[in-house]
Length: 439
Image (cartoon, rainbow, N blue to C red; front, side):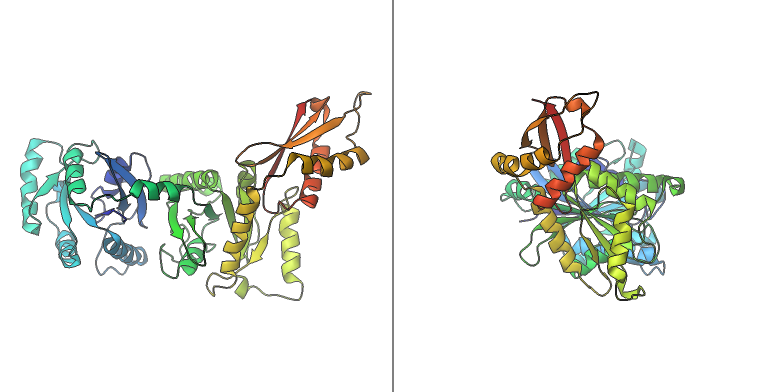
């Protein structure tokens, strides 16, 4: 049974600061203006041997016409529905506001347990000032400073007391941690969040026409069609020269970490723009980290096409990304749900191939005749002799070629061996690392 605590309240009362303190890492982006947290953000908290999920939500603004604030409002409502317990946060420095009263009314209707938390209480005078929040009608309240951690211990004691008892959550978390992670990356506004929402059938992530809507990396479990995996929606990555806000810098760093932590990286392109230098940087970063790669060309439904357009488009992409060209390219429309499930099937195929282990005997029977027919070129009058091949035990696909003079094997021959491995064994979408070792 899930045990979920949602931190809710109006903008800029310190919800994300408390979230970061509870989960023990800087997972939510924090800045001193409202609207920074836009989507629901999940993390784990452990207190007195009890583990539960914490959701950080965007600041709630009722009846706003602003496109972001209306989308945030919907996200908060989803979080309230998902949670077992609600932490309602207010700010002692601003007294009770109309927004606080509106939010209190909504939370009372939810019939969920609510803990009222007065934040930014840093001294005894402010504890007295907090008494005004009894007017919200939630009974006992907790005065804390999420920035310093003051009062959070008592708050967590109350949280654990009110939550349903743990019934094997640790086993569930361990099982979830072993699920394949598929990260969707790309430049801003190519349709990453729309793709995930189309797969799930509901708006897990905020989608607008404004680039940069997703700022955090968001994890969603996907269990449809006999699959069980984690989808990671990341912030769009612009070129460094265009990263002006501190906020966007954190988003880019989080996206890069998502690539490092995933199993398969889905690089999404906008059909109208094609593959650009920043896309290739992302692809090569995934390749460098040994992550599986799938390229999705989104918005294909509105792209002008002729008979061989898809083939020519794919050839152009692969020409730009040489020498790594052995990866799937799928043309999709997230809006029309065209080939979106094929994209997930392909990503899972790449994940399966990344776990391929080839028997040493099969590897040597296949590769040694090829090496004998086309040996590495000699250098300085010396003959290089490769005698043995072995796949290395590793999280990525790595091979060791044992030879007499490993230091003299050039990059061109290394690429030749990689091409032969790809030709004889199916590693489409999977980076291959080759090492030469002294026999």
